[in-house]
Length: 143
Image 1 (cartoon, rainbow, N blue to C red):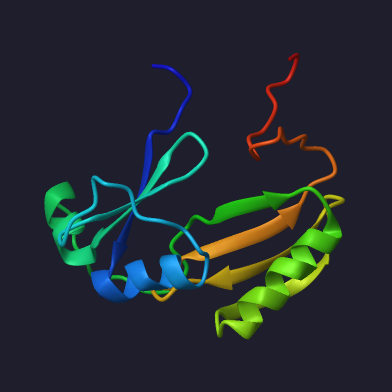
Image 2: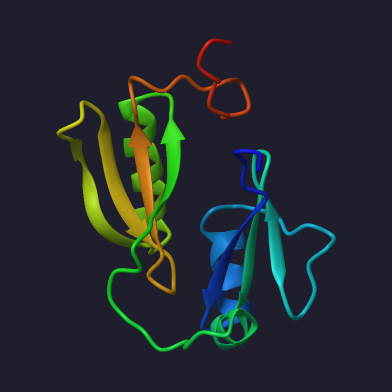
């Protein structure tokens, strides 16, 4: 199996509201594959999909009931500490839930957390050890 991710799928309580959140707060555009049942956003090399939580759980044959920390985060890495602060300023102006304001962190970077409408956590981070190309993709080690 190749080491890659094609789609990150998030189960959401309200598909139209969640779709509007990513369009309005993040400024992302839906792909043509989106419809009234599922939303797709093209990221750099992968897709983010939004699908009703109960239907996603049904498809996976698991319970949709659960709360608290989901056991994962999504990360958006920047090229500087200043860019992290700029993104947080924009998110605050747009009324996005700030979970943790940006700060210097134990591993040597700078990061904070925001949450979407379903409390999926997004880490906005500057990692001085992670090199990004012009499109924001991580540069493979040894390249």
